[in-house]
Length: 312
Ligand SMILES: *Cc1c(COP(=O)(O)O)cnc(C)c1O
Image 1: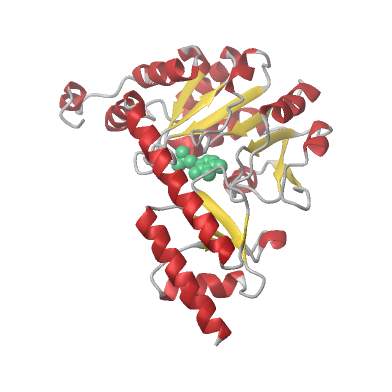
Image 2: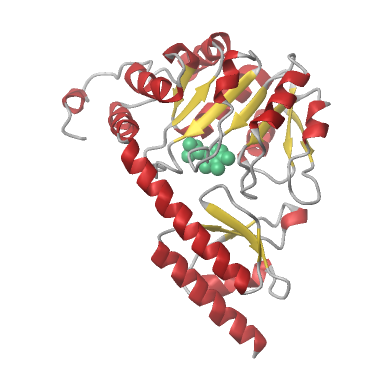
């Protein structure tokens, strides 16, 4: 990739609209390049969205979700509130239909791994055309149905994708926003003011190569799903409540082992996992990212030894 012809021109500024990569992404998603914006990861895209549309408005998101929404709202001084997930950690579609603020939904959600059907997203988007609904589909490539086709039907919907998860390219940091031409145009104006050369030629070369290699993506997704199925089954057998996941992580808790203790004991065995003490309702839960099958076998073995020590 680094020997491609574009790489010989690093002394020059990049083509500022990232057109080649947006064309590829558009084709894969069945939309036009004018309906796509490229960013340095979906985090940058979310930043443009908040700055473009939410500054003089308000925004809401579930109480258990991706923490960056809160971080952006607080950092930019945007009025915000949480709409609690239901008791089983599923999305409260009814509450969101009645919501007057702009809405951000991760679907599938992080860190629960839960997915709501496209019909539910459509109900929320259609309920009030005066607020914008952002659907963050960071994990969509794990065989989940995208609500992307709805951008043709609703001009208050923005769909966000990333190459950090299923494409395994977090280090390249590439994300996309999809929406009607007017919304994307507004976002692009803000991007042009804040960071007109946001996608470097190096990033573009990596992104284009990966978008052209869908076979690699599919193989990686298959490996993750296989390791996820293994880890879910084994950890359930060890007594964990493991939520059904549509992503590259699992979210779990154990009746006799606190989340805090589990994280600490795994760390002592060289395995790093995450918990969310600030999300009160989920404070006993632990998120484990799915690695290779061998890595998940190591997680299961370590967990078994932790539970044995606990029982002793
Ligand atoms: C990982 C993640 C992101 C950030 O992705 P980047 O493209 O790496 O910035 C955004 N939203 C959700 C829900 C994520 O899980």
